[in-house]
Image (cartoon, rainbow over all chains, first blue to last red):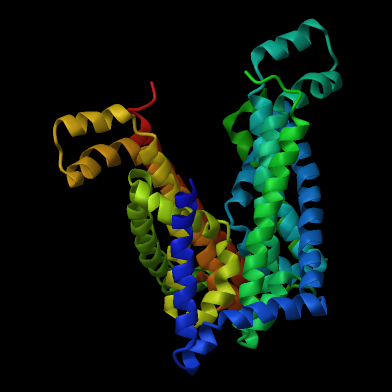
Amino acid sequence: MKRHNIRGLVLPLLLLGAWEYASRQDAAGAYAFVPLAQVGSAWVELLGSGELLINLWASLVRTCTGLAVGIVGGIGLGALMALSAPANRLIAPLFHALRQVPMLGWIPLIALWLGNGESAKLLIVSLAALYPMVLNTFESLRQVEGQHREAARVLMLSRAQQLRLILLPAALPGIAAGVLQALAFAWVTSVGSELFLSSGAGLGSLMMTAEAGARMEIIVVCVLCIGLCGYLMSWLCTLLSRRLLRWRPTR
Amino acid sequence: MRLLSPLSWLISPAALFALWAVLANAGLFPANLLVPPLEVWHSFTDLLATGELQEHLSGSLSRLALGFVGGALGGLAFGTALALSNTVEAYCAPLFHTLRQVPSIALIPMFVLLFGVDETFKIVIVAKTAFFPVALATCEGVRAIPRSHFEVAAVYRLRWTTLVGRIALPAAVPAIVTGVRVALTRAWVVLVACELLAADSGLGQMIEMGRQMLRIDVVMVGVVITGVIGFTLDFALRRVERRLSGWQSH
């Protein structure tokens, strides 16, 4: 097992070595491949000045707000579509047609309508989170087993009771999977929207400023941050959903 | 029951269109923020007639094809190697799974600095976007091949190339096609994003120019075409997927 771990480190170290080597070749190399020490000092600098934390915080808050809006709206819309055939008939075609346009493709249009401030970004992030939530809620409510539905009918539960006591609990694992997807989409879209509408704080805006100034070390720090945060958030989300869904009997 | 007729699917899109037309013609909003549907249609036919649209489309699609084929072939080869060889797995898997976490969009500024704003950067980023889902799906698809297939291959003393080409790939193909489909739609999104940020041609650049010149009709044409192309790519590969996995599911 020990040997296994060491072998996994060979390639990353080689790549880092090659990066460092390229940075020492000439001025052009140092421009694109900044020396590793400089990346390290950029970490310290960005952390020390609070710049990284402010921007990271702005991105995280936007992601979470958008995610919350997307989750609430998505569960509502998905449940409405799953439970009412007429609503499904009316909403589904429009929903699936609009879903085809890539999230980032909406940005220019939304920017024209809402400007490039916070509301435009929040709308984009919320939409990005909404799609997977609607799809997952719809599918998992549809797939609730017949037995459960029959039990609900035998007990003569009202529609609201059916939803609260039978359908939603049965659909929760599917919905939780949707939240995990929505989280990933919201995070990527949040950073992406900041790249395009780079006013205000956010990791994407920080990267765009760094790109304009050719500060590769800041970009590297941001990319590392984005990857790490995305990973941590989905790990946290998985952990949380596993804990909250503990009561479910595993078959 | 009338609602259940097939035509009812058209109600909401038609209603949206009608609302759009009424609102735009009522003049509630400034004309540069909301153009009537008819005007969007006119600018679409104009763009077609001048050949501008075809030019942008061919630019975008050739980039997509070039980057995607490169990335997908690389992913195919790497995924197979990762699944079949313990050595490759030991050396590459940790790096692979780490890099997989970084979203392509976040890499755009970095790649711009590394490769400049020319073609190379877009093709590399499309290839990168295609590589990871295909490699992952290939790896999982190949891993899911029953061991007995390999045992039979060993009994017949098949050469390594035959093993991969005739046994491993066909059995893993449905999973791989799913990976390819996901990769293709993602690659398309990322490409349009790249073109929005930095390009001199392509669908994304057309949208961005439209935005800067406040030509919302051009932006809308671009957005709709982006959606239609994304849908067509996804739909076509879904058909392939269904056909290829038909023999598996009973």
